[in-house]
Every structure is written in C-alpha cells, then in structure tokens.
Image (cartoon, rainbow, N blue to C red; front, side):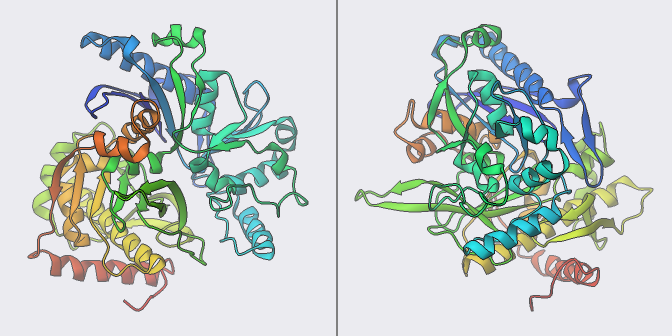
Length: 495
C-alpha cells in the first residue's frame, strides 16, 4: 500500500508485486469539513487532523475498492507514506500537535533562513538554507510560537505524522524528509553547528532510510481501516522523492518532473553537486549495485517551483479540463506569455520572494488564457532544466519521466516535450502514492529498492519533441525569459 499526502488531499493505492494497480482512492481536503486551513500570500498552515482524516478516509476507501474487486485483505503486506517536502510541526510525546503545521510554501521564515545560512556557512561548507526548509520554519516557531515550541518533544513532517497515527510511535523520520530539516545525508547526522544557538537539536527525531520497516499498524487502527493485523509500516519519503521512484527514471542524467500543485524536479546523479545559491539540494537513494556487484552512489539533485497546476484549481474550479485542453490545443504555440504563479514568491528555478504571476491573454476568454498558462508552465520547466544543467555540469541530459496529475494530459505532455526539446515518458501509474508502494515493497517482498523499481515499473506512453514547432517555441521562450529579467526575477546567465 502507498499513501500520498499532498497540498490538496490524500491518495491511497494498492499495488501488486508486479506493479499492477489494483485499487486507487482519493480524498480531497475539501471533503473534510470543519478543520482549519489558513492560506494567504505568505501564510500557509493546515491542521494536521485534516491530514489524518483525509488519510483515514482514503485508506478505508482503497481497501473497500480492493475488496469489491475480489481482493483479499490478508494479502496486504506493508504500507509506506509520502508527504510534502518542507512541511513541519511540533508534537508532544503522544504525537499531539503543539504548534501550527507550517506548509512547505509558508513564506514567513526568510529572516530565519538567512540567519541559518550564515551560521551554517561559518561552521562548514553547507549550502544556504531556504525559507521553504523545515529547519527555517522550526526557528521561526521557536521565536514566534514559544509556548508551542516549549511543549514540543519532536519536530515531525507530514508523512511522519500519519505514520505516528498508524503505529502509535513518534520520534522518527526518514532521511528524505529530514534533508530540509538540516540532516547531512553524507555524514548521516544532524548538524552540530546549531546546538549552541537554539533548542531545536534536542527536538529532532531519529533518522532512518526510506524503505526501512519501522513497526506495524496498531490493532485498533487496523480494525478501523479493515486492514490485516500486523501490517508493516515502512519509512517513506517526500512526495517528490516518491514521485521519482514511480517515474521509471533509472539512468544517470534522467530527470523526473512531478507536475501537481507545484513543479518538483529530480535528476538522477552519481554524486551530490554543490550549488552555492542553495536553490538545488540533493536527496540520496540507496546505492545501486551493478552486475559485477559494485555499489554506486545514487543522488537526486533537484528543487521545486511554486508554479505548477494550482492555477487550474484557482481559475477553473469544476471545469471540464479535457474540454479546455481540446480548446487550447489549436492555439499552441501562443504569442500570449504567462507566468502562472498563484500567490507571491518563487523558489526555483530562480529565487524571487516578491515575484507575482502574469498572463497577457484576454481575461474574458477561457481558451487563450488556458493555452498561455499551459505554455508558461512548460517554459518554467525548461528554465529549471537549464538551472540543473548548470549546477550538475551535465552537457547531455537524458530523458524526462513525468509524474503527477498534470502528466495525465496528452496535450500538456506533448507541449512540454516541444518546449523543452526532451522526450517525455509517462509511467503506467504516475502517482507519488505508487512510489510509496514501491518503498513498501522494497524490503518486504522484493530484494531492495532497485529490484522493486525494476520489477514494478511500466512506461505507458512516450512523447517526442516536434522539430517543426521547436524554433517557434525557442523564440517565445526567449521572450518569456526576457520578461522575467525585466521584472528582476531572473538573472541573465548569458543564454
């Protein structure tokens, strides 16, 4: 079983050992009434009981679908959970929330991020800390929510919180979620430069590797969810890392881009590149063993943009997206430029806390604006690949393996291939929850992560760039870049 907690809801999946999706169930947070959510241009909080209620309903729903199709619940072996990267809250020893849950896109910790970056730089060669990092949010909570901070026994992430509700245990996290809390993936340790400046270090959890079996579901919870007693709970990952695992990317140089509410980028590399700007950070996967038995490090340098598909929910609530796709297709390429940012501030492929979105298309017509924003997301994706090329020093990157809800659109997939000049592949199941299911299977029914990926992944369709449209998109992309430079959002790197 895989469970994905995102910005807008929870999605649960049940997958066979061969990678067949046998049941899938989603619950949007809008379906859960009476639980607080706060979102402004800067503040983004969610009540963690919202996460649990959505997760509980998603799990009950997916098990019901599994049973309706003749599935036997006693065959379920394990579950892993992924959640949004950089989301954090403080909990007490029982797992009860002591602080607000600050989401990954909460923008209040810029001052704390700058201060942490100075401390880290003085102590080591650590890259700068971003305001989107959990660590910056922890320092903000220490200074602005001192009562809740004092009551906090452990800082926990979104995936950890759900795991604690399943197992009844708190105080552990996975290395993927721990990265933005300051965990050093090379040293496999929390930083020592923070201990004399803050009380945060004594509230940090134990860290284990994704795919590690960490316990089992409580009997009372198992009965409520109609899952077998003793179901194993496996350490998960961030949603971006889980999406990578679901993508099919396997060769050094391959990219995975998850297009959901935001754009999340991951590139498979054999070493962790250093980005002095701090925009690119690197997750680590288990080593890959070749046919001769030699082990090779596998890293995931990447980052996340605040641009993605959120504008669709904001601008077209309840709309028939397939119909909008169909209406937009003949308008592409479009001369109308758009940077479809919802809210304020960008974090990648450039850092611009004051950035605001724009769209040149007429506001009184749906199709031109829809087409321009589809194209604008693809332009941001191209900028991101250029940024990753600079950081990783990669002259000939591989293919792109696309995940997330946005990859379901054939028109958008072809547009992204045309704009970036890269071949895009869509896996049979392009959900982060599927990546969590792979983690759940890695050390329970398969021989490690890479064996599970090799046995469970299937590519459903590939999209190749149209060379006839390439020059037009190159010109429009140049105009888009120039607009961002004029606005002061993007530096001129000489392209």
